Length: 159
Image 1 (cartoon, rainbow, N blue to C red):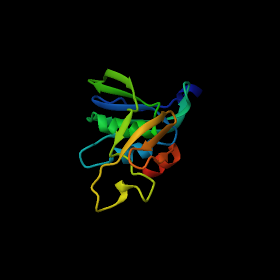
Image 2 (image 1 turned 90 degrees about the vertical axis):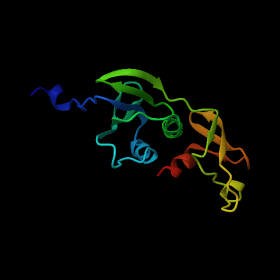
Image 3 (image 1 turned 45 degrees about the horizontal axis):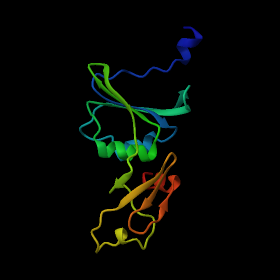
Image 4 (image 1 turned 180 degrees about the vertical axis):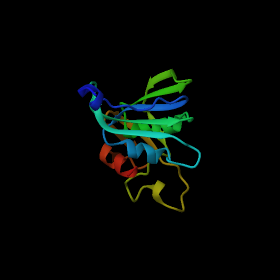
């Protein structure tokens, strides 16, 4: 066995599903939590963490077999990994590639960190809405109380 064979990282290709690549290093477990994985229906989930990347230095990768992500899930991932890419795989071939794009408005994904915000009162069934102030690193502002929520506070909600 040569030196290259010993150090080469091999991750099994998936026949159908989604590959989330270029995830910010050490955030893959947050992505699994957002997607509520593992679950009873999803059989194969592959996670590679803190691997070398020529583009971003270190990254995580998540492969989910037989599942394609919906827009709400992609919006959630964009909050945690704003530079991630998504590849939809069918018959072992990528049929759709794209970068995750954080929308201008986020609805019902986050909670406002202001305890006095109207969205945090149990008697007020109001859906949290946030306007995106900065896409990278993500910073959002509560639509109701105007509290700024920075990346660190966003990350804590997915831990």
